Amino acid sequence: MLIRTRIGVSLDGFVSTRDGRPAVLAMPGFDGGALYGFPEFQQTLGAVVMGRTTFEPALGAPRWPWGDLPVYVLTSHALPSGTPEHVVACTNGPADLVARLRAAKLDGDVHLVGGPLTIQAFLELGALDRLGLLLLPIVLGEGLPFAPHGTAPSAFELESEHRFPDGTLELVYSAAAG
Amino acid sequence: MLIRTRIGVSLDGFVSTRDGRPAVLAMPGFDGGALYGFPEFQQTLGAVVMGRTTFEPALGAPRWPWGDLPVYVLTSHALPSGTPEHVVACTNGPADLVARLRAAKLDGDVHLVGGPLTIQAFLELGALDRLGLLLLPIVLGEGLPFAPHGTAPSAFELESEHRFPDGTLELVYSAAAG
Image (cartoon, rainbow over all chains, first blue to last red; front, top):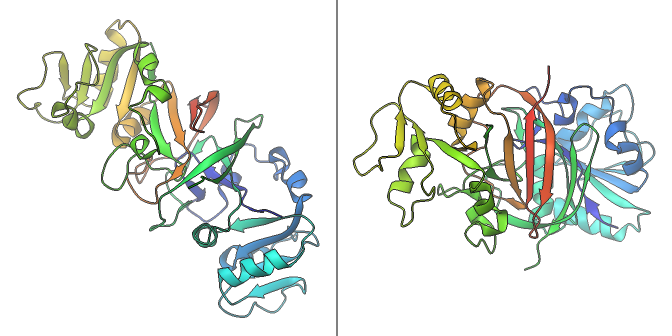
């Protein structure tokens, strides 16, 4: 089981547009994610993880994005009413969440959805096994930066790359040795 | 003749470190640029262009980086004494500079070195024929952002990609049609 991101990022390093929508939605001709292999990716998963800010919009969305996958939400307080039963509120911090994921005998990988602060917490714990990016061929100019202010410098190894027809690149990195 | 960038950028979108050094210098094991094909790239050039902030450190550097290539510097005032004779101060703005480059019958491409504000000016004029990035497998956390605040959103087409042994990717984009 690997904990991995797969987050759309613009050439200038933003994961969301100015109005808070995921950067991938800013791609000309965005078709719902099938182009970027999200359905196939989801089939490799045993769980998804995200911070509360990323989770809450899904509660009001017309379609639940994660099927019957267990959803772990990193939060400092209880989740709102209406939250489905298979959503787990994790209120003891990221290290405790990582320990729960490692112990859960999940049948597949863990998709760390975001947002940037949650990804950063996993990076700092050394718990992000794969940093996966969808590098979108767009410049956004502003939005939510991929790396929150104060992120420590770090180096990675490029594990794989894949080019989608529209020029988006899927890049998968692991933490560099040493 | 194409006007093109070839600028090192971190995964989080910074072209320089916090202390102002080019991002590529933050790569573990950086060897002076030979790894990334800078010498071969330079042989394809007919001129280099940069803003004054990028130019001035070169005046005090132990080695002049651009051989005998013509160097055009976008600046609002005269260049300091000690500036070599083949350096041209361009004080009439980026549009005038672009017209001069197009008229100069250069024997090769133009390397738009930077910085970000100068690149942005060329982008806004539709004068950047190729947006070339060296995508470095590092996160910097802070530094000079590739896209200055207020950059207009824009889309690109991926023209080519090349992987260097250390996982750095050379990505060349052109402006998307329409």
